[in-house]
Length: 113
Length: 112
Image 1 (cartoon, each protein chain N blue to C red):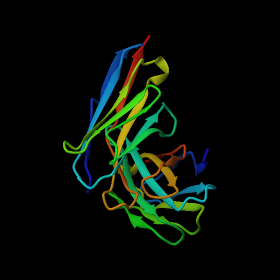
Image 2: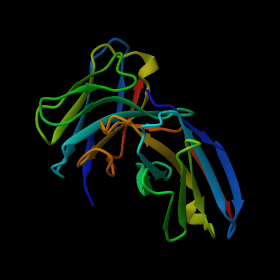
Image 3: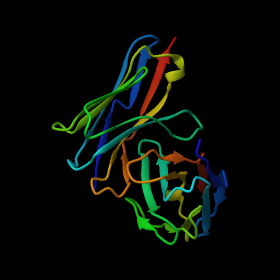
Image 4: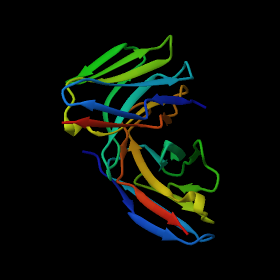
């Protein structure tokens, strides 16, 4: 099945700077790449997603880039705020459109004031 | 906002006992999923379902069964619980493939 590697596992940045999280996948047929944010004690919530027919998507301070040839995608948070501190997960779909998502192991982001 | 409700929120079980985790969604979503979350492993798919009466094996199904008696309800069953199944379990629902998943608030299971 699909494998997703996510790096770094821990990320600390200064408030106002940018944060970047990188993921790679193995199945070239994967076509859907969501990102979820999970605050302590809470459930994961979708923050942004990108499909294989796009290379870049932006929602406010969130930017997702997809490089299908390299099988890599990344999340960039610009102008980070303390409220961005959380666990972030990337995921990749099953290439057979079963709806199965394979998640990365997560990145703990801490934004220091 | 779509609602997914899990019960119980916390459960302590004994080794060898039977555990049933329940999930209910009122969103009329076709697809439902059970994931477990362990430190260092992210979210791993145990079982999923495309609709009432359907269950499919995910990536780590061993030691678990699933039941989808209706569109709204999806249960995860541990027939013989083991300490290695101590984890946080999340149920999720989605309208169709490759669309947003809505997660419940999780069940923290401890098997002693």
